[in-house]
Length: 234
Ligand SMILES: [Zn+2]
Image (cartoon, rainbow, N blue to C red; front, side, top):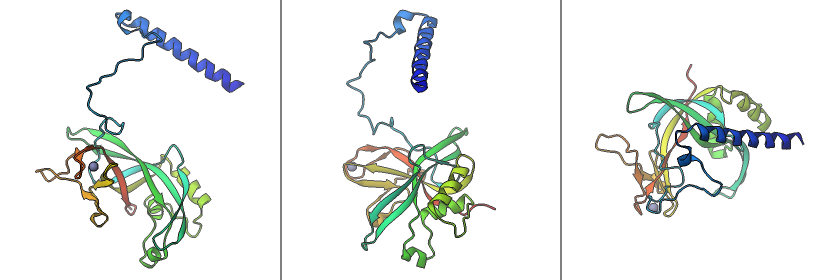
């Protein structure tokens, strides 16, 4: 009951707010929306690019400090899959954000939050033999979280909830774009053996911000990704 009342109250307040705003405008007749009014549609507008409004990445590829935070939805999950050699894997996975400070072309200090970085904790026998950590392990290390032998879901979850929004890490930022039609990845960290295309550079030797699919020529949305984690700075 209480929740219902609260919801009703919120709606009421919003309505009042909208009414108050409309009466303060210079010419209310131009701005007051009727219930039937849903705005306009431009038939000749350019085709949308994946709904994000043509986002181009802001944080230049390279090593950056980032403020760690858990993703809002499902920060912890277990992905199940079968590896190439037929091993069934239950991969405990963390989805996280990293907020990076950077200087833009105008010399202004800006912040950008890199979303949907996904790291798993599965470590195959091959990785162990090569003394390679999982990406999840690398994330914990860059955040300075050493759980010793106490590496289990509950301990990792608790440690990362404590680090959420508080702890800095250091990672490698790369740009990645994907053409759904051609299943083509374009990346500043291209795995060319797997068929990824290299992200193009301009005549100044810097990565261009607008990227197209090398197969079909469609304009693609690039986005930043934290692809590797560095040792914490001491
Ligand atoms: Zn394409």
